[in-house]
Image 1 (cartoon, rainbow, N blue to C red):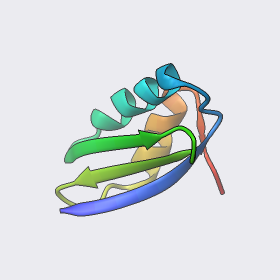
Image 2: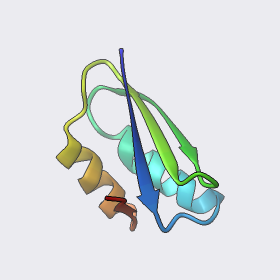
Image 3: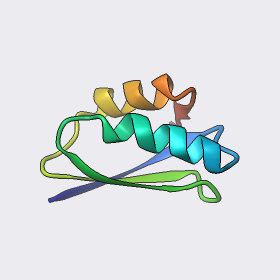
Image 4: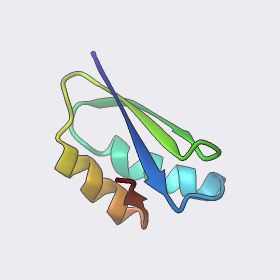
Length: 68
């Protein structure tokens, strides 16, 4: 099991969190996604390390951006 935490900018509500969670959950190997809107963090549990480009693509598909 691997855990990855990223910072996502632009999230302001539960709907934002749900959109990001839904898109990241579709990445192969992802087992759990926890979104903390107040901290602007997304914690991703997966069976193997998740490709950073896949995370970025999923976040952008949801309408948000990775910080940094």
